[in-house]
Image 1 (cartoon, one colour):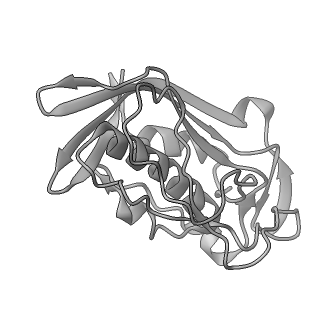
Image 2: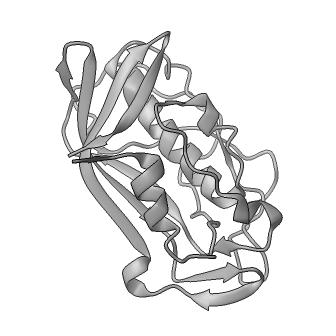
Length: 206
């Protein structure tokens, strides 16, 4: 059994029906620093992006009156396209940040910088400013020090967690999100391959 980021995960996080996606937590790493290109003995833990563009202004959390404003933009790491484990790690970290940005703004420009085998489904509801969630986040936790390599493919055990927050605004109407629908967690192996000068993320396979 396997599932893709686009089909299973995003369909589950949009399970509120007419409720779209929005919001974002305060990003812990903002600035213009470069992702560390040095190889490490262990990458275990949350894949975190080092750099965000905060030039839009002071970040404002979503409220019941408006979606989040001046959302920090993920900055592509310099080593993201390196044919190395560090490059794969940076790709995964950037993917998580780009997906989170997509969920709040509806803007897929940063996701387009990640080579994905499956296109992330459209999230059009949030682009008109009438629908958003209170506090969605995207985290990818790598559960081993290093990925497994089989021929020219890499498999990295991981846990993907997406949270929505406890309330949402749908077509300008605030509603509560049921507790059992506030978080989606999936575990498996990130499947990736280095091809044409970049890492391609295929899916998470059980």
